Amino acid sequence: MENNKLKFILASASPRRKELLGFLNIPFVIMTKNIPEDSHHQDPVEYSRHIAQQKGEAIFNDLTYDSFVVSADTIVCLENKIYGKPVNEQDARKILSELSGKTHSVFTAVSLMLKFQGKIKSYSFVEESRVQFNSIGPTLLNNYLLTGDSLDKAGAYGIQGPSLTFISKVDGDYANVVGFPLSRFILECDDFFKPFLEGQTWQELF
Image 1 (cartoon, one colour):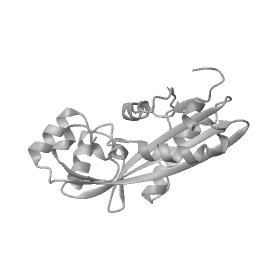
Image 2 (cartoon, helix red, strand yellow):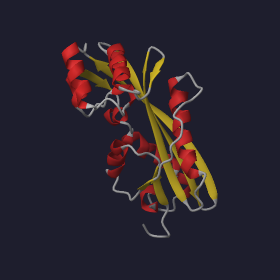
Image 3 (cartoon, rainbow, N blue to C red):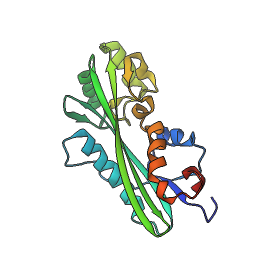
């Protein structure tokens, strides 16, 4: 990256978010810190927003150069119960059994933090999608758990993998369920960067 360019930092180790952001063809680097992914909020929107902001602040607060830090958090919610990543296979089995045959919400919060031209600006948004599961029979459930796909994903499943064997419908942004609402991110950045643009697009800042 050129020294005079704004530095784009993705504060996430998720390979799925890395892949989705890569579609923008903008240079970025990944920087992460291990922080407790927990919040006192009970509302799923504020819960995911709080964690996304904490992830971003853990990186942003240590930076001394012009930078744009993007962080995100994805959770699954059913009947006001929030599901994060399962702690083990037994927990994943329990979560998937509770989601079986029902429609749940997937919330992804995205936090934007900017240090540029002597100014600091921050903003966050939350996107919701709805995902419907068929009833997951014991054989299907066992086969899915054997793949190991459930263990590092909110709600114990990843939509882009073998969980497609029991996902019947998605209402809303598919990429949001993957873990990053890319199309809305672009629209939000159009507004977020507007005060800093001088006849160029925000993508050209990087």
